[in-house]
Amino acid sequence: MPRNRPSAIAAEIGMLSRGRSIRMIYAFQSPVRAAGEVGRLRLSALVAAPDEFSPEVLAVVHKHGLAGIAIREMDAEFAPGAAQAPR
Image (cartoon, rainbow, N blue to C red):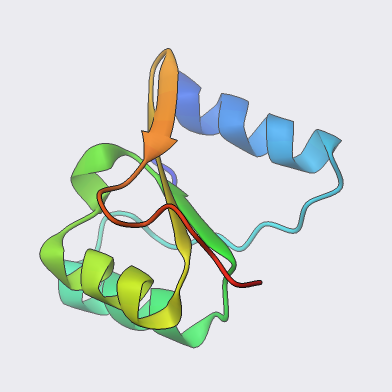
């Protein structure tokens, strides 16, 4: 769920360089709509800025067992309670 930030670009380049598939989710939508997209896309992980992990999005991440990776400008960490993904 990228925004126009260097950290998002770096994460995308890193995933592409390792042959990972990327599905983009429009970050400038309501948390409810973003959560709906996260649930429909059958993701293994959600990579987004920490503020994108709204309660609605985090609930879907937990429900589907996704890894939630919060990226900052010079750091990345698991979103609260979202450190494991079964896929």
